[in-house]
Amino acid sequence: MEVESNGYFCGMDETKNPWKTLSGKKVYENPWIRLDEYQVITPTGSEGIYGKVSFKGKAVATLPIDEDGNTWLVGQYRYTLNEYSWEIPMGAVPTEEGYEQGALRELKEETGLVAEKLEFLMKIHTSNSVTDEVGMVYIATGLSQGETDFDDTEELAIKKLPFKEALNMVLEGTITDSLSVGAILKYAFINKLH
Image (cartoon, rainbow, N blue to C red; front, side, top):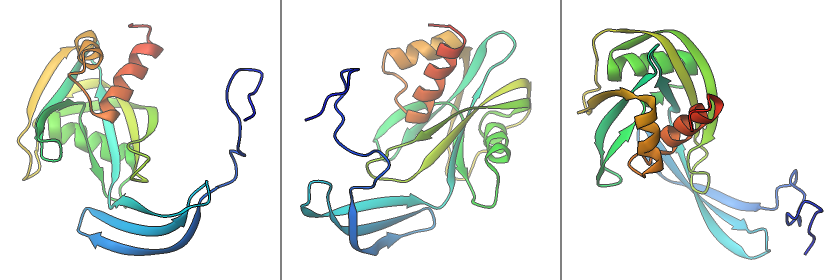
């Protein structure tokens, strides 16, 4: 085992893919996701299977911040978790729609907010052991209130609160969604709000 001078283990070339794909097949598909299963040779040389979920839309999230330092959260019951979840406004963007356009649309649909300015905050791999999904996160400012336009399947609660309360919700484990946690922590760090 090699250890670099900085104390980190270094045993592989980070630019070389150690996985080998022998074959792959589609297992399941619906209008939102596709599940593929691959026969693989793992980095240790053993044979195995690997499943990958691909999403038909692109993930986008927006952290709205007003001039008084408030933000907005959206609450909903998540079927997959069987529990209630507080999150920043987010959604799926069709492949033909740009990330920024989708971020503004989702913000308006879920909160009624219209933003004058949108700034890129970060890119997140939402669950890189099972999906290739990439989430793009933006900060929205210059906000004005309009009407919501929920999807047919959505029953949402909207909460306006000081940003520091949202940060505390992350630190206490009340907010657990990866895009929301990443966005709130990075915004707090950048703006020295911790």
